[in-house]
Image (cartoon, rainbow over all chains, first blue to last red; front, side, top):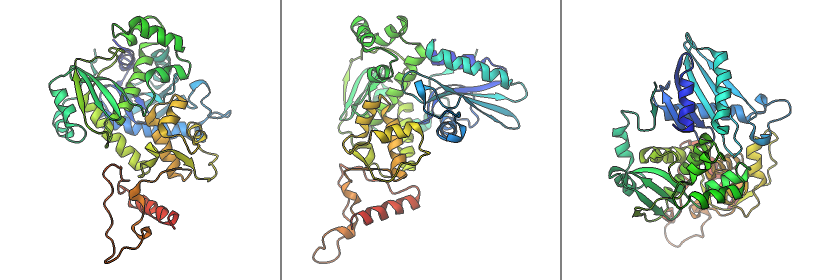
Length: 132
Length: 287
């Protein structure tokens, strides 16, 4: 079992998980996907979530006070949360030591999902994905 | 247990067969016959195993070695040790992970990104004739194979993405220079880094190499900088010359000359306003 697949399967074990993906937000490329996607097409969903992630990562408004300088490959934003009437989306930026623009996307049902737990676990997964 | 999709989701197959017509008919045939070997075009190479793409390289985008060593993920001695230890067995990727130099996830993220980038350039519109040599394998070894259909879909999607940002493609391939317009203070840091490397001589490929950054990312940033009026290509595609700027011809007014076939023409504009602005800009600069 490989790194990306392991990470995605772990995300799917979170309560309420419907689907997950690893996405490059500069290009909109889906590097790996699992489960369902809200549009029925993982690649289309990846392109849309990538655009959303890019805006958050590039706009000063969302950067910490000390600035958005990507020191040591650290993305200025940690995660993004979107809620609607029936589901949650959590996008977690992945810090890498090589130049990249990658995030994890988890989609989960609102009635059985646990947003606080998902945020913590996705943070840990993002770290383990690149550190091993 | 949830199955991870590494193959095509059902329902995609019909669309995929027709998608093969766009980029390289040979590639579609090789996928269908589950071929193994290397496909070579002017702007890069694709390695196939059992009809799936396992590796790709192009001079337009840095290789895995540059991407991994530029940011200090790997020391260059670590890279070369892996190549010398495991290159003959064609298991360099596996060796990097098994020896603890790199996590499987980091290798996959970096390698997949490099693969799709190199494939984008290799399958570009004027990449020349296609050749295939059966039985050739790359020394990086298995990492995370992807289907030919996925690579072709992604390549077409990327072309459309670039055209939506800015329809003029000259900044993809030609040396780029700053226009003199002051950089917007709200310019995102990653894009500013690209702008800082624009010196009138470097091309997108040279900037990517200098930054150790995936080649397609640089194309995206240069198109956004061009759209903002901060960067322009030093060489204009011949087709960009407005007909009115040509010397007057004898006889009836010259019809617009079709662009030379070896040049990508800025596609007429999904957004007519941008297309109009580009033509206006060209005409003003030609005065």
